[in-house]
Length: 141
Image: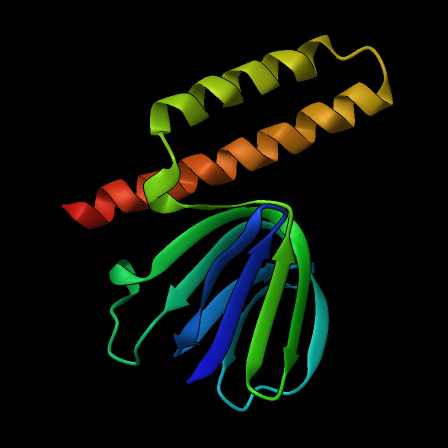
């Protein structure tokens, strides 16, 4: 088991011993298990998947949507520092879809590079939240 700490701007989202954590990075998705080499990396927007026990099925993993941050692994402790991390249970699919539609409208109406980049960032965030909400819905069936 590794100690996993998921910390957001509003506080600690999760702090417990887990079997495995899958994280989005600039190089692609990585998995962190007990005995992982020391690492400092950038987390990108995407899904953080947490397997609490070795026997936890993929469809039963805890899932968080994140917009990026910093990953640190040292001495069987994984610390992920992010601005936001929305647990799948906290995401309303309808609200995320509405926010995605609004962000796409903002992108279409962007008149400068800063507005375009802000809109794209919002699109990426809401698309990830929708993906996480969709996983939760499919896994409940």
